[in-house]
Length: 571
Image (cartoon, rainbow, N blue to C red):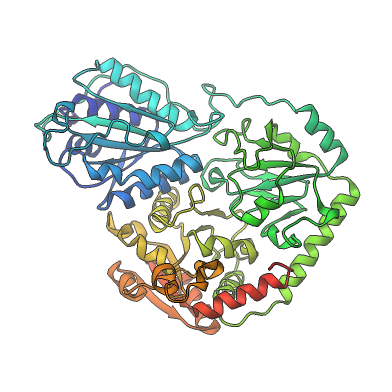
């Protein structure tokens, strides 16, 4: 039933698209200022069921929408004007494509006849994001009927939830050309009634039935199978039943959402000279989620038969052929298998020995010690004051998190996320902000912690150019400032002494304090263990947006990490 008292854009493509989005349960949208996208902005603004946020920078806006989509697991349209603005959605779409998150880019466009005629803000946008989307289409009201526009809009929502490999989620791109005038309003168009596509458990797209492969069943019966789990973005969403348990030996990343008696994080510390000890060598591998970030782990598992769990888990889909040994899909109930007794005991003893080495290592003030202090301080905050949601930026931060038993410092069942699809530092703060905004919609008292590095923090400095401005209340940002790209000190580039600092480590000319204050954040700084504890306790008690900068020495941080890894026999 159309509300005849309500207005929308006079452009039928914009009005129809927004009506369909609302019909399909879309409740959030992010827009960036522009003129050509005025029809979309006005249609969204006048729809009572969709909350619109404004983000000035299109690259930040797309990551903001990515974070909301991650939390809600519904498609979130990010809307921009034509030209280079549309290109700026690219990094977030690439992340959503590889992480399998239901993001929707809606790019306004000039009519096709305006291309290559010298008009401003005009590029060819029709296939702009095709390589990194699961679906792309043009909604051109001059060529399509209202029914065709409606069908294509519904198809876009469906594809964002189920159009990826193995019915996984993924991003879509809709390009919508508009003729002038752009700012006129008209009655809400009548749209043929449709059924909302369910994000989980709906009858429209049932989970795929996966039979147990006979070769895998034989390996499971012998009980020497290893589960390897990278990040699972769906586990950071509000969807129920995303956490999984396995009894098998399991190498999981902190954001995997997988637990079990033989599950260990930072499993690359079990390797000896890059190889598995013979008593821990598996005969087969089960993977789940994204590929693991550790190159050493990936290299050590080459040549082993491999099956992926995901096709019978809604929104996860098919696996990656990481080692050129992927034999197909496996059912999720394979996780309930048990190792044979000796294999399980060997894994348990190896994990215990690894944890003993970790506990015995006492680093000086460095990045590693900052992470240790962060987790220890969270543990002493009390169960209800600990973080219930943690977002971690890429580069060094995402790796340190694997080694410090981060879950011990978080609330029971806390959600953890890092943008590990492409693993760039684009939009780390913006994604956390979107994720946080959606969580506060569900719980006004929700808090989100972001742990990031100085370069990632500076790189996404436009993240807070948003409206409403109070969307960042309850967001706590910890910036570990080691004077540039500290992770490059882990790599061979340091041998180029004349070029390393300027071209690789690249210290910022801007201070974290200045940027934090420009963001209207409450700012604190820590330069030692005591100040770190005080700073974390202050952030936990602060209801406003707050930033703690932890300053660590770059050379000593690299040295301490090297010593730490050497204690496990890792060169």
